[in-house]
Amino acid sequence: MWLCYLAYWRAVSMDVKASVRSESVSSRMTRLVSIVAAIALLWLPQVPLSFLNERYLPAGIACFWSGSTVTAGGLLFSIWARNYLGKNWSQEVSIKKDHELVSGGPYALVRHPIYTGLLTAFVGSAIALGEWRGVVAAALVFGVLWHKLKLEEKWLREEFGESYESYCRRVAALVPFVI
Image (cartoon, rainbow, N blue to C red; front, top):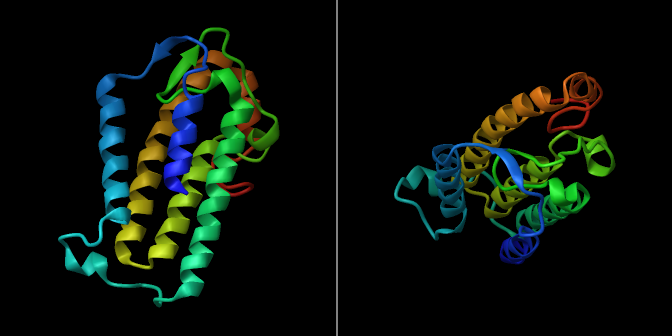
């Protein structure tokens, strides 16, 4: 699932508007290293810290398929959000030329549905794995995306002013009606 998702994401990442403001390279690199570490925690057969390889869920098909279903749902939600955002999407935090404030579709449910989908997918992968390293990976991704979200929201407030403030009052950032 994840490899198909990454291939899709790469394929659609080229058709976007030009950026007029982008975050620093060091900020993007820090996020990339953290995401790669989270992926390694999930995909390596074992990690050197043995307690992270211990199970927090029972081994078995039920946890695997439950987690896989949650992962698929998260990835699909993220894809819906990416498609809805269209040419306003970017890998890094940026403001695009003729940037638009998108608030329909998945953006009517949460302000950052791509992040919500990714976090859901990482949680699903942690459930499917059933080991503590999956929990650490999901927490690491949450921290990285929360930091990115905060910078993105600062820039969107600067760009759209009261329109964005009003949107923030109506729509939660990551979890509908919660956060």
